[in-house]
Length: 390
Image (cartoon, rainbow, N blue to C red; front, side, top):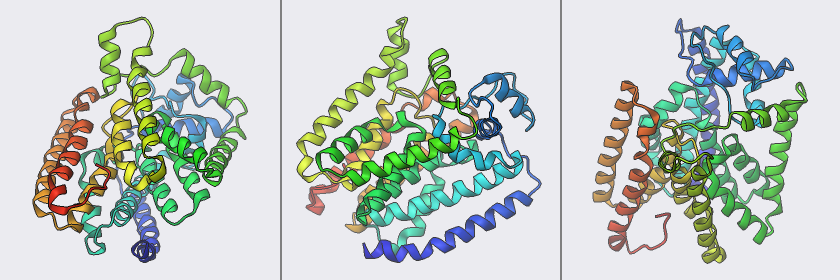
């Protein structure tokens, strides 16, 4: 707790870094890649003007104004409350919005890495190294390049943990609500969170979640009263059936059935396993201990998503285990883990540069999760410690 309080002093530095990066990037004569950020920017502009942020034809017209040349638009499949985050950027020109968003992404990753490192007991003097690891992680580079909201989801997880550690339940609920910009990614976390909150009567956590979602929804609803109906129409008329790098997509392809129900079978099974795990450990449930495996397992069984840029969330288990290795002086595990990290990160970067199809990233999550688990268990006897996320 004391370490986290000391680290809070660096917040002004992070804010100053964000402002400086925003100014420098906005002034640079660079044509930033459109990436996926253009979907948020275009949807935000449409919604603010009372238009349909989920209409492909209208989205394409907006994106063409930013120099987008593809024949098909990049459509935002995120729920309407995501627009509360996107609308301030939609009020800017695309170039300015992209510059500010890029700066915000970088500072967010730095903040998340430093907080995760300290929350899991890492030595404060190594915080900068943890930040470097986070910035060098291949999926982090992918998220930044694409302008994705995955870094915001990571911040929601970190803020949730830190708020619980400080016994601020309302803030914890508000932070974890941020992850609902992609609700399918963390299904296992959400089922255990709701079970934990109701069983423990943590009404302030639930209140923080409800207030955040309602507040963001009102912001999206105010200029466009049909936004939720428009989102429902998109999801029913053209539901996401992407070839995601998940076992769910593989199962759907091999099942070859008229419906898409096989795609949701792994998520359903994962939810049952998570619920059983919570029930068995409910009296000693601690999200700081449980979150790393919940994140990895959720990404593994998600119905769709878990793209290369979403795997930035794997920083949670990696930094949690890495902090433990440093804390216990487990040099062998730290070196081995570093080599695994370097190899996986380098391969994902190479895949991105080669334009490899996203579905071929299916190996990343299980490899990272199994490596973390194996390395922890291999050194557990030397540490004589039995309680840990893996």
